[in-house]
Image 1 (cartoon, rainbow, N blue to C red):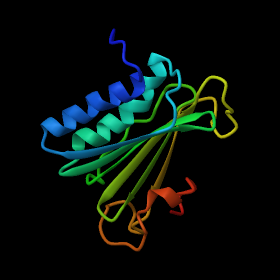
Image 2 (image 1 turned 90 degrees about the horizontal axis):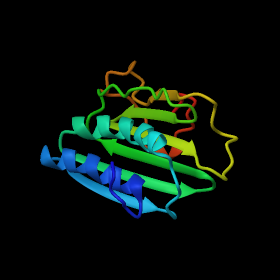
Image 3 (image 1 turned 120 degrees about the horizontal axis):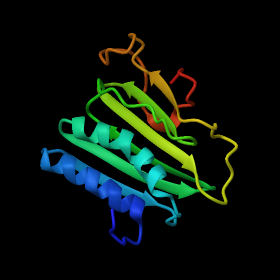
Amino acid sequence: ERDQAADPLVHELRACIGVAERNGVDVQLAVRGTPAPVPRRLRRALTEPVLTALTTAEHTARATVIRGGGRVRVSVVTDAPRTDIPLSGEPGIHVRTLRGEGRLWVEAACAVPGGTTDDWGEGGTADTADTTGDGGDGEGGTGSGEPATDSGDGTG
């Protein structure tokens, strides 16, 4: 906790990735945008859902940090679609999940100081979408499973 990393959020995410890699999971990490000051409590709230997904991955995971437009988003795609992701109790943290085609996508996001907060509510929230069309058991279905197109409205 006292590490003086140039990018504390990515530093904490790399620690989460280290746990998954020690369990035999191949993890790729992509970071976009300029580091923004994120208080420790928000960093923890952003990384907790991602850590849960990473620690239950079986073989592969892809983690992403995207910063810009006054927001920071941390996401991961894993091959563990049945994992239950904890809701964030931290005000301002927005957690979304998407399950389909044997994969789980989790995104935790928040506004950063000086940015706009028009898309984020006051409390921690979660949106869940099941793109399998089968009630959430992760098998079969017709959804694309492509998280980039998820509107967060549950339609996939």
